[in-house]
Length: 409
Image (cartoon, rainbow, N blue to C red):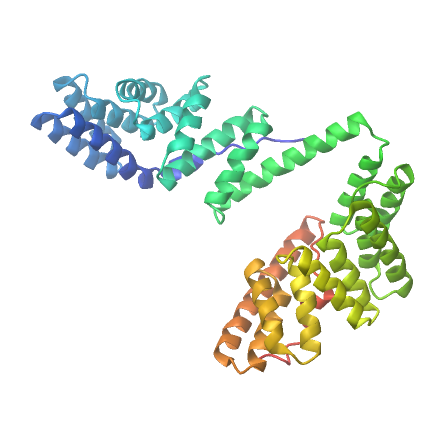
């Protein structure tokens, strides 16, 4: 059974942070319309109470201001905010709507209005949330509006519109746990929906067999995955991507077995003919050559991969491994530094970067880098443990982490 998560409590947690943003916008409106002295005083008193989390006191001040000046935009906006904090979305909606009708440029008000409308089930909520999310400058308020907008789409099952909002939220807040949690649900829902459509449209197709194989790879069942890849290729021998994935699965299932290496290499070579040149395929061919102690051939594959895509981390690592084996740490530093910059959580890159720095007598940098490596390795261990609890697999190849720590700088 699936359940749709909701994030209504998220905004409440952050409201004290947002208040100064709202109040700044409202104050600008007040200046523009030249609020009388008495009205301004009550507005200031109300905003002070609002900032101190005393919405009832704030409401009294704002209502007095409205008695003195019934058309005051700031008073309506501030009162709407106070009513919202008290949980009275119905009253807040009316005051915020009045303020926005009088001053359509108040994007902050539009954002909060959209949130209130969403809570009340108004059809217009999406329009106001979309407009505010697109134009808000303040990062915190934009985050809150974006969460509400994404949740609105998610609750309606509109993944096509939810996905771009979630992507933007992750881009703006890459370390926000709530956003990452939300994104994980949206991405999983999208994946499930597309797989269900594929299963309904063509359950016996080559692509369906490939999807099953990919899920088995992620679950760590490489032997069964290989069988499903083979079934897919029996149906469609030219299925894009399948030969590469099959070759990778065969090699990964028994990296030290020469027969698996040979069979895997043949699939990779077939992938080159069908899919065209690719840095990923060249890197995997380089890995096979390295496993077979064909050092020069491995380097040639990694260099070809690097030429195809200089940002391919495995190509950078393959070249650096070769240079380190040749006793050329200075040359290896270029590729290792690129790998660390491209993939900061790559434990192998961190470790060998530290060793290379030590080898060229950059000892302080080496020590710092080794400390980062230890942090990354501990993080990897925690992630692997979490995935084991979920019966999922995290790929960490044997060469990525040192067997011992005797070579520490």
